[in-house]
Image 1 (tube, helix red, strand yellow):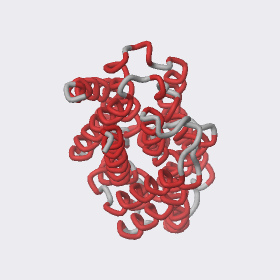
Image 2 (cartoon, one colour; image 1 turned 45 degrees about the vertical axis):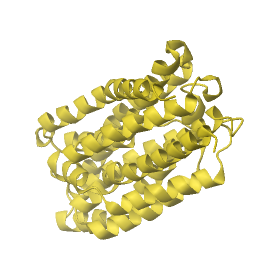
Image 3 (spheres, rainbow, N blue to C red; image 1 turned 60 degrees about the vertical axis):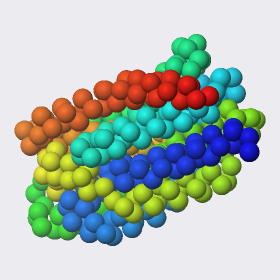
Image 4 (cartoon, rainbow, N blue to C red; image 1 turned 180 degrees about the vertical axis):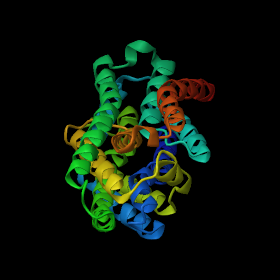
Length: 333
């Protein structure tokens, strides 16, 4: 058997493993608020998230095309398939470490950072499509800032509207509303995050000469990535749920509703313009914004600071890690 097909097989396995890990790593963010406010039981939240992630994943491909061709041109890379292998190993390693520590870091940052590092390690800085990379970086940076501001504004408006209402009735009403927002949140997560594994598999197919362009995402790639994420989601991610849902500040149903609707809207907007964003960063930032509107001192800013630090270091660490992994792989090419 031609060795290139063996390498492509390794890529597909690792990409689906990445998507599976993403399912229990990042999807926990999507259901954290609804679980913490008891709008949904953990079991029902995970079932809902698994289903909606799958639906979202198979309905869109724009983000996959961006991942597949905007950072670098796979058709022009030397050893492009091995670049993808190094990318996925680096991103998976970082995801597993942060999941184990209960830190809601970004799978998107890990993947983009790892791909950039592996490409540079293989073919130098000139192989990076600077415009495409900067466009992706802008989306990753500005989306959490917009989410924080949106969370603050929406929560402030809700406070003004319901300031004199019965707290028991308010909690009951918004707890019911959270079932819908959790579904929407999980759907948008599938539309954006599952696309990243699809894009990286397509990148490898083009690099291997099996496919001519990244503009087409094969159906089997879409279905397999969607299934992998749905299965990963079904495992859950209790460590992340505890951090997001209980440790940043005490979330009430109205807070969870506000955070969910803001973050889901931003993620879906990004998907609509084919830009990958960090669902983790967007969801966490919206929670921080909502908490600040509720009461600034209610937010545990020391924990928030550690989370933000993990955001900052993820891209460079993943890039260095995958660059080193590529150099090890290159010894066997």
